[in-house]
Length: 144
Image 1 (tube, helix red, strand yellow):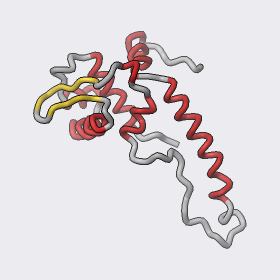
Image 2: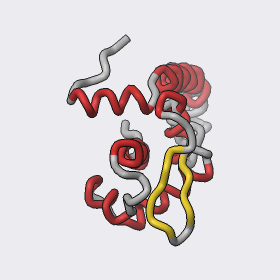
Image 3: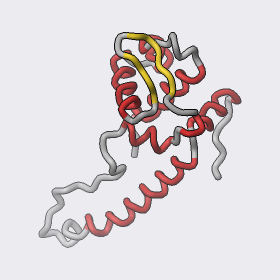
Image 4: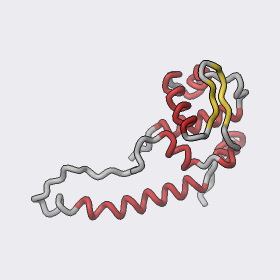
């Protein structure tokens, strides 16, 4: 199981905006820190802007956070950059003639929904401020 790297890249971008001189930081500079292409960074910045998390101006380098780091929940960031609401997907073409195939979707749906809710609740417990603190302390977020 893997959450796409767009999510970690988005958090990295937000962290750079807050910790670096946001008025001068470019997508090229961000891409260098992240180890990706500036086009990827610009795409993520566009999604973060659409979600109301950053402020940018077309053709002008720099970006700023639209709200304080403490107000930016990690769940908000996830929802801003991920294209689907469902973390888990169930294969849709199971054989309806198979006793397992015809029941697997119903058997998994509740479990997957509960697991996703738990993850979303945990992500909502943390803010960008928590990430920034960990960057500054070179520590890890402790499990609550």
